Structures are given as C-alpha cells and as structure tokens.
Image (tube, rainbow, N blue to C red; front, top):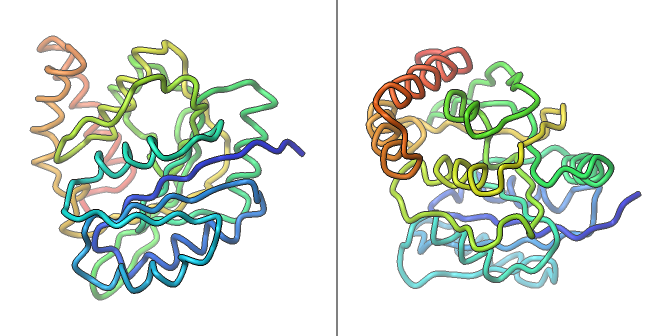
Length: 254
C-alpha cells in the first residue's frame, strides 16, 4: 500500500444542502493520509454553522472569506495553503466513493502518471427531485488537442502531482475557469491526463447553476478558446461543436 499525502481543496458557496455529504465522503475514505482545505466564499446560507462542526478535526482546515471572491480565488487560496505531493479537488455539492483516493493514488504511483481522472455519475438536481443519469464512459487519455473537443474531465475527479503545477493557477473567470485551467495545464506540461477506470465521484448538475447555463457557456467557451487557447476560427468552431455534441450525449437536453 502506497502512502503519499493528498491535499483536498473544496470551495464552497451557499451549498449547505449538500455540504455534509461532501465532507463526510472525504472522512469515510479508506485512504487516510489526506488533509481537507475548505474555503467558504462568504456564504449567506447555513454553511458557516455546518462547517463549524468540523473545526475540531485536525485533518480539516476551514477558511471563511470576508467577501465573495469566486471559485478560482478559493481554489488558488487552497493551493497556496496546501503542501502535499498530491492535489485533489472536490466541489461542495459533489461527493466521492469510499475507495476513490486509495485506488486513484495507487494507480498514479504504480504507473508514474502525474495527472489522473475518473469516470463519474451525474445527478440532475432540482428543488423537488434528483435524477441519476447514466455513468460516464470517458476516453482513457487526454492531451490538449483532444481535450478541446471533448472537455469531459470533471474537476472533482482529478488528482494532480503538485510538482507539475509549477506556478499555474486558476484564472479569475465567472465561468469555465476549470476548463481554462485544464487546457493551460496540458499545454504547459505537454503531459497527458490518464483515466483510472472507476466511477469514483458523483457530480450534481443543479438547475440554475453555472454549469446548467448552456448558451452562456458556449459564448464564453468561444471567447476563452480565442483568448487563452489561441484557437483560430475553424479550430474554435470545431471545439464548440464537439464539446456541445459530447455534452448532449452525456446529459441530453437537460
């Protein structure tokens, strides 16, 4: 059994309804060598009260921001505070399966892979119900050119070897900041992302959330591909077509 410490970075903004489930999915991990950094982005719901229950746990570090700064700032804040070999991300409305860290980190060390991800189970969440969608079946390897046509890597499934991050951080964007981060990481390192074949995370698609705003996402994708990924017109058009097509295959017109 390999034993390398992993720091888990969890931004939270007004996700009190799901926060306990996310945190408890970390506490229940069969892999015990971890530290959880929770950055609350000035939530106005019950998040503060929930988070204070975990303050006595020495493996959990909680930070309350004095004003709302966005998910990029929260993740970068967590990266600055963390110091472990491996970095994982978990959004506060998602959760992990029990053996996620154990299986994925062992896979990374045995195969010497610096970036890995897994399949995941999407859940369509509304106020009145939740619907479990079909498990993803993502390709085994991504490089930059394949990722801009099929941006299927979910941030809550990623684990990264810290030394390859260098000085790269999340850009301060209102949408798709994680897509831009992954693109820049692949471009700068020129190393592929590898999949560990297990659906180790559950990903919530919340109606009216940032990820459900399809038209806005497409417009921003065009803009970010042009500005940050330096794509020409035809390459950008191809990227948007294939990403939209693959999103429809996964989720339909949800």
